Image 1 (spheres, rainbow, N blue to C red):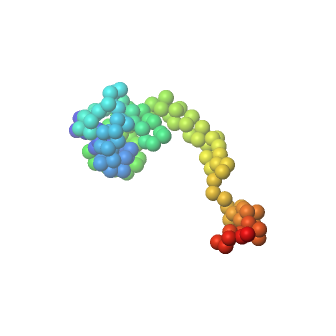
Image 2 (cartoon, one colour):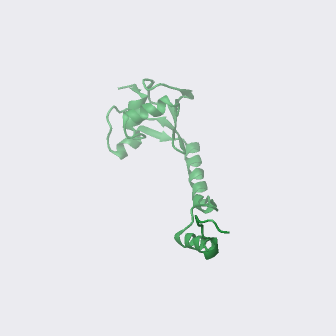
Image 3 (cartoon, rainbow, N blue to C red):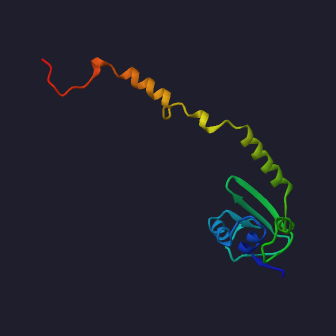
Length: 137
């Protein structure tokens, strides 16, 4: 086997869980072969460069082998070799995510906690502030 569809190869190399997911990602333009966008039926061969995005992670790999069947992870890892630039970029992105602030800490005015809610109710409620349907004269 010298050539294989890109969606089958991505599935066999364990980048995506199903061929359908691989085909959808290709259709969305998140996969490039040799610097050009491709379709799911595009054939890849050993030596081709594949660039793909999986969420925030961007990877660039070189195809080293072809397999039409999905095997165990150690076998799948032998089908490709990640470029040194891609490895550095992934490590830098992981480092940045590790040291970035927690998103929840930036919320200043969110929903009050139970304690804050009780304090709000106590300060807003008073006997003179009660609403009444009667007309006071």
